[in-house]
Image 1 (cartoon, rainbow, N blue to C red):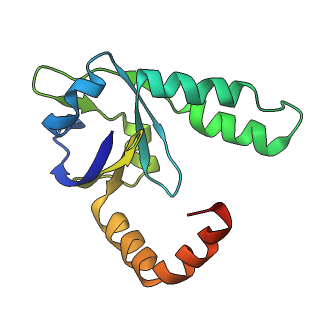
Image 2: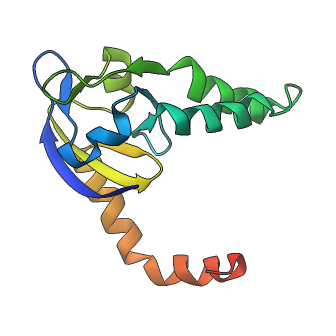
Image 3: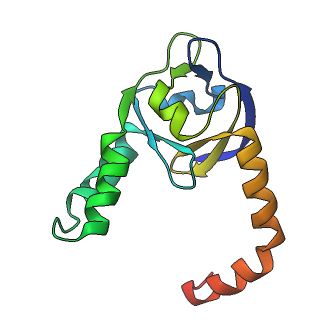
Length: 143
């Protein structure tokens, strides 16, 4: 499982170091794609396959289904950790997430999220500020 927050710098070739403790989950490959909230999602290949099967089952006739499918699938690329534990972030994904240099890798249980550092800090501050309201709204979900 992926947990925690890790600050890193993207190198001049567009590579980012993935924390060592996550290497075993990613050793068989991973998929990097556009995420929600203008971050990137990095899924271990098995987790990606589960999500892709769910996306595949969405109704083709609904525009939101098509839009979500395009967001997740058209921007996806298979990645492998290099010998130093880095993955390459393509230019169009860097542009999507406004990534230039400083990033934060966030563990989200079944995936990693890669955020531009200031965007993550802004998002985190807003979420922390509204945490009581968010928690109350989750009561309906049994949390």
